[in-house]
Amino acid sequence: MHPRGHGWRWRGCSRRAVRFLEPALLLLLHHGPAHGYTLLERLESFGLGEFDPTVVYRALREMEEQGWVVSAWDREQTQGPPRRVYRLTPLGDEVLRFWVQDLEETRRMVEDFLQAYYQHVEEHPMEEEP
Amino acid sequence: MHPRGHGWRWRGCSRRAVRFLEPALLLLLHHGPAHGYTLLERLESFGLGEFDPTVVYRALREMEEQGWVVSAWDREQTQGPPRRVYRLTPLGDEVLRFWVQDLEETRRMVEDFLQAYYQHVEEHPMEEEP
DNA sequence: CACACTATGTGCAATTTGTCAATAGTCAAC
DNA sequence: GTTGACTATTGACAAATTGCACATAGTGTG
Image (cartoon, rainbow over all chains, first blue to last red; front, side, top):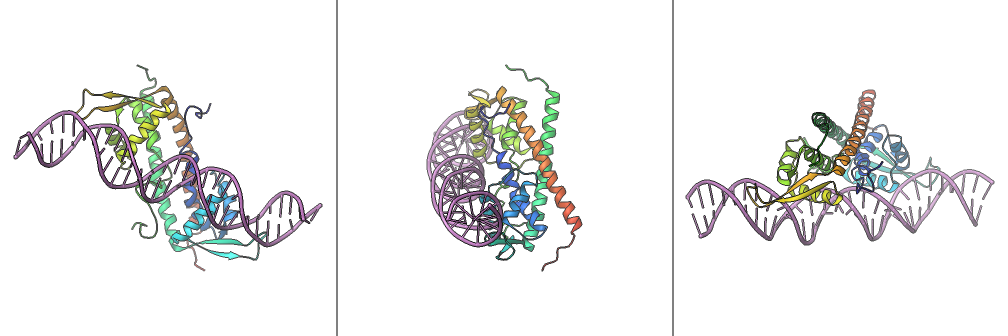
């Protein structure tokens, strides 16, 4: 059974993947330059769900505004229209390291939360309804 | 050093990959009924950062709309104006269990990401700038 | 040329989040 | 008795985020 239909909107769940988008793109670009369309595919094989192309392209353009990546047009080796090839900048590399620190902290938070949950339900296995 | 000033936004802590507010409130209410103001304080002692009161109260009202909690006014044992005491419903209890499953999945994602990162930087310790 | 696939982009509505300010009761001190 | 500090909740609106529908355009195949 799924909590939809009980008023569960699945927020935070469908949205969760989006929160990983920027760090995931930075990490993929740490492997080497790439263009949006392949990044889109690699993201999915990354364990996160599917992404709307628009969202990915937009994220890349915003990351370029921030100076985390730079892009150049590639009109050559393409099986379609020209494509924009993104490359990580030193700043982007730095930002990726900060993201990693942040995810470490997040991991601790998730673990603390889950531990608190399991410990509590262990001590209070049945909840009496008043 | 913090990446502010490099275009990194980091307002509050909103860009964190995981949002804990709702599951944390559900877990706190699993301990027993409580009103917003104390939940606000307990959230902070929970290891998560500080929360804006408005955000917490709003979350509680929305959770009530969803039927995860119910509230009643308490005009008695108060050191101030009447307060709204929230209590977890059976549905809220169920939703908490789904949140826990979701956080387990999130934990796996964070761990996979971090592992991919560390593995990659280990194999490519220095990035040459072209 | 019609069609599938590659590749990127615009624009806008809907939702979510942040913030500022308002209201209001209790208590203690002055 | 009123000023100020703390308790407690809410409203309204701006700003940011996200989803989605659609637009554009090149390449290769039958």
